[in-house]
Length: 133
Image 1: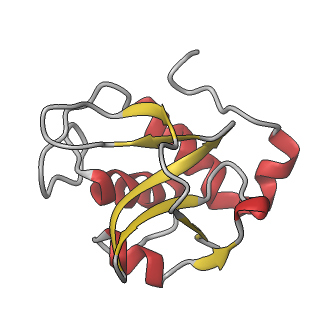
Image 2: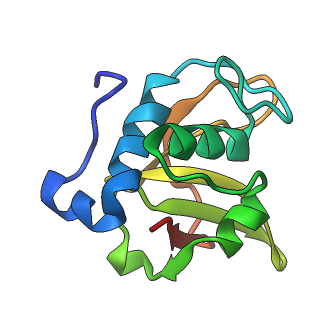
C-alpha cells in the first residue's frame, strides 16, 4: 500500500470531519520517520507528536500529549469510528498512547523508541476513540 493511501471506504471517512481524512494522509506520508521522545516533526515523532503534526497540517490544532488530546476530542464508540478518528490506549485513567485510525482495524502511529512511524493493526481491545471536529 502506498504511504498516502487511506484504507476503508472514502464516503464514511467524511464523517470524521474535514480534518481527519487529511490528517490520515499527512500521518501516512511520514511512514518510516524515526520515533524520538518529545518530537513533533517534521522528521521525527513520538506518538502524540505525530498526531499534533498531522492535525496541524490538516488545519486543526490539538494539544501536545495523548491525554490532553483525548480531553479535546469528542468521545465516540468503536462502532462509530471512521478513518481520521483518534485511537487512545489508556493506562488507568491516563491515555498513554495515541494513533490515528486508518480503517480496517489499523492505525498510523509512532510506537516507541527504536521504531518508526508505521501502519499497524490495533493490538488491544482496551482502547478509546475520539474525533477531532
